[in-house]
Amino acid sequence: MFELKNKLEDLKLSGQNALVWLHWTTEQWLDSDFYDLLELQTAKKPEDRQQDPKQLLKGLGLM
Image 1 (cartoon, helix red, strand yellow):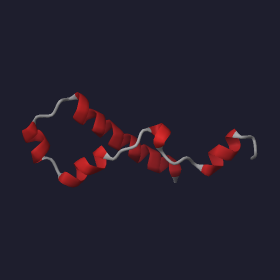
Image 2: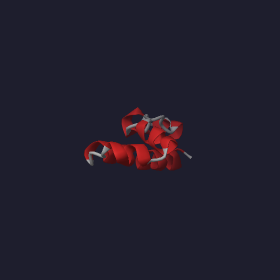
Image 3: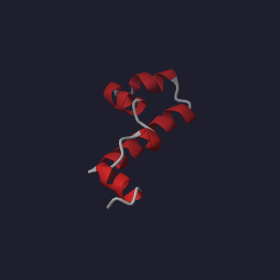
């Protein structure tokens, strides 16, 4: 479950980076779907995401 959620978040983050680095014009921004852009703007970096509890326990050597 966490792996799938992280893959989806990676896609959103790449879209967010495209907005910043491709320097969209105002017209491109306004012609885009609001809700898609909102999702892109709220994408989290990998270090800011919720982690899989099983991976955490494995990393600590408790599993």
